Amino acid sequence: MDDGTLDRLAERWLDHKRASGRGMSDNTESAYRADLRAWARALAGHHGLDAPDDPDPLTLLRPEHLTERALTAAAAEFFRDGRSAATRGRRISALRGWCAWLVRAGHLAADPTAELETPRLPRRLPVALTDEQLGAVVRAASTPHEHARGQWVSLDRALIALFAGAGPRTSEVVGLRVGDLVRDDGVLLRLRGKGGAHRNVPIDPVAVEPVDDYLADRAARLGAFGEQDPLLVTLAGRAVTTGMIEYRVDRWFRRAGVSRPEGELAHVFRHTYAVGVLREGASLNELQAVLGHQNLATTSVYTKVAAEGLRDVARTAPVLRHLRATRPGPADGGSPASG
Image 1 (tube, rainbow, N blue to C red):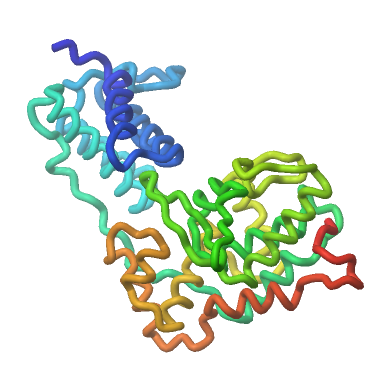
Image 2: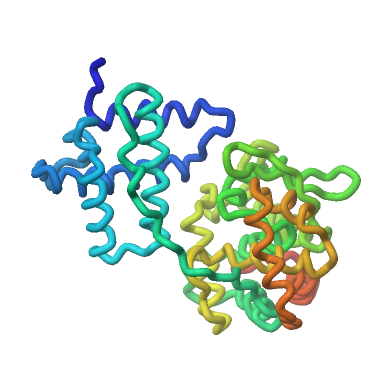
């Protein structure tokens, strides 16, 4: 069998992942590519195949370069470079999945990742915002600031409302279309989760108000839109991206004087939503369905936060209350279109 270079085999593996029943999001595919190339750069150095100008080091390697000794050396290099345990663990997971496929497809006689140890991650509980912090963040997002780049207050308020009202992942918010706000005996938000899984999440009518304000403002500024158009766009008419959302959330936290959480900033709203749902009396299985977790163990970590007696941890209701309290009235020009 002509095994070919590892770049070709990586593409075949990614094709296999895309064709599987679970599918693969663009973000997941990008992460896989980055992780495999990181391994390839380290392996090329180990085997003396350095080519700094080669944009894809996978082209330098063949299956026989995937040895236990070489992979162990590459993993040690990641540690010396100061890569976090989370990054190293993610890279090992990607490599294991690829090598398992290479064995099944007959490109490797045995799995060379068997001796690789997955780093132990520090045990961290999700961080949720207090009611006071939420109020400060909502006020910061609802207040126009002079000279702020790309400012659009109604878009900021719609973002907070979606995160607070349904607990979606940032990638799920990015993927929303106008028609995903389903108004039928209440309002549902249709979310596209990991692996192409879909779920409908009830969203509080108070959270829908800022979204409707934004849509009215958008129509006035940018013209009509259809059901299949992106739900959230910038003033330039471009669909929001994960990077754009993170930039806006970072700006809210800085203006509010609230400590920025580690990792993906917008994810703190998902944590806050989850803790609030449990403290309102929902079951773990109900929360799992709403959050779109495949494994109940992933959801169960929120019970530890909710059970720690954090009486100041915000429920969903407070952030919605802050949104309603900061909604401009007729005297302020109606919908929050300023900025």
